[in-house]
Image (tube, helix red, strand yellow):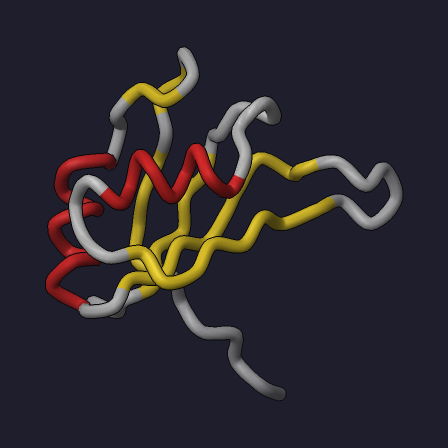
Length: 86
């Protein structure tokens, strides 16, 4: 299911939200990035969400960035799925 929000996994802990915005912004307008932090350590868990202004931009970014190398690591990019409420 295509959405304007992407899940990005396998990221280096060295990356900042600005690094991610710059890398993904080459493929469309990034409106939001969110790092998922470990509650106990306070460090990045290695995955982020990147939200684009449009679904079309997200599709372009997914196609261009899936398995691309970022900070020396291959990253996995997929469309984010909404949390299901119980």
